Image (cartoon, rainbow, N blue to C red; front, top):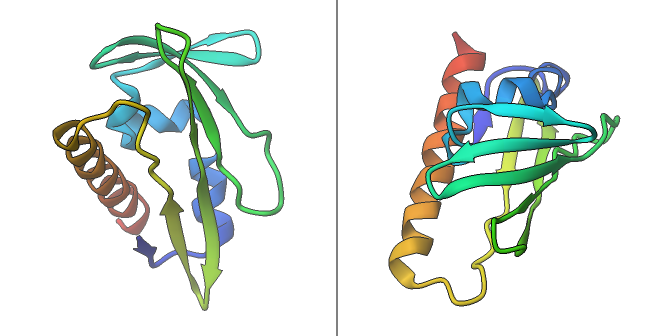
Length: 122
């Protein structure tokens, strides 16, 4: 997703776990801190989330542990592109995930990135 803001500004907003509920509906309606991890209250129940530490590289990776113990890696990056930024999220298909669920998750990612763009470009 192209965002017409400097990459440093996009990262400064998006790297904070507290900002995720404003734009990342896939993590549910809110996050609660639990030590160095967070609990997300998502559509399929509560999950544990671990975020990359703040860094100068635009890395916003996070790892979601589902109630059954399955851990999902979610690579997320902010990269400078001229005066703006590109935000990319790699969505992996979880083992056993059917086509409909994967398509639902793809739609969530597209919607979430569009919300992030809207927040940062206003």
